[in-house]
Amino acid sequence: MVNPHRAPAAAPASLAAYRARSRTAAAGGPQPGPADVAAPTLDAAALHASYATAAESDSRGGELHRMVAAVLARSDRVPDTHSREWNRFLSLVERHRQNPKASLNCGVLANLVGIAAFGDDPDFVTLTELGCLLGVERLAAVQHRAARFIEPNPTFPITTIALRRMVAASPHPVAGPIHDSTIALLLEGVDLDLHLPVIRTEAELVGVVDGGSVLEWRHHLAMIAATPWSPYSRLLVDLARQAARPEVAEVVDRFTEMCREHDKEHEREQVAGEVRRIVSHSGVTQREFALWVGTSPSRLSTYISGNVTPSASLMLRMARTSRLLQERDVPTTPSSRSEQRWGAARAGVDGGTDRSAGPTERTVGALDPARPHLSVV
Image (cartoon, rainbow, N blue to C red; front, side, top):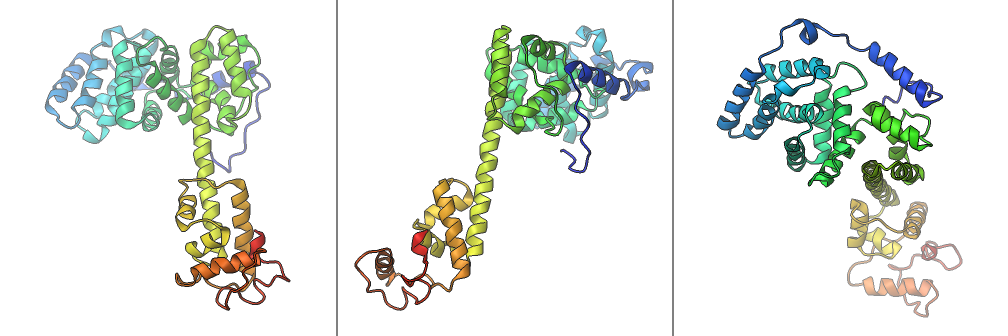
């Protein structure tokens, strides 16, 4: 979460300046410790046997144990460049072998490591299974949290490699769900307060996709997350297509759509909160307020809950009505027996011919034709 009291860092003047800053931050990050280089590598084969046995015997966490075992079975293929993160991963899964509360984190982390280290088809199938089990947003939250235990610097090398493979997974049979998980993971770490000079050329876009860290991707995507209706996302999509990177264009398109859906949901919640505030401040019941603004109580209830968003004109009418109800001494809602006469009274005040309203329906001063009244709203 963004710290509202944090002073924003000065924005770099160029993408090159940003990468130089990232390298400096990475160099100043956690240094290799005994668990990374000095300690002997744990026996991955023994860990695999342990998790494979647990996958058969544990009725509740068996599937998650199977995911860990599937990654440990390929330990002989781990690239030397990943040895530090791999050793941290082994230490983590060994430490939590007997901890049922950690099985979800271990399974999700194992899948992320498997995608980064191997990128085999079964890894992407498992990713899709996890997305179905948890939902892509919760899955991304667990991935983001768990990866921090094994990534030694703030550029997130394992997550970066995994995301590159996920972005490139367009030919895969389950590419749609994979891209959904990609976008959710990118969005999970976006900080709207951090930004970079915008991408303007194909070369800059390709440089970010092929050589930038996930941190850099998130900084660029932060502009889309902050203003998903802006033309910047279309610019990135066009540049990706010009650079013959259709998979990047698809991810940016999906990222933009997800941000727009989040925006719409947030706006619906804001509108519903404003409707609740307006009705509450009016001083009358929801049923009474619905009659004053010319809608049904059930319809007003959908506005209050956020299930339906009222039109802009109705929002203005509700605000004016609430204000007038607060300022004037108005009658309460009529009983069901006089509701028909109340409607007739309203029609008469609005210029109709029926002025037979009794004292209950038409209070002197509040609805007197010589003064402004609520029929104008």
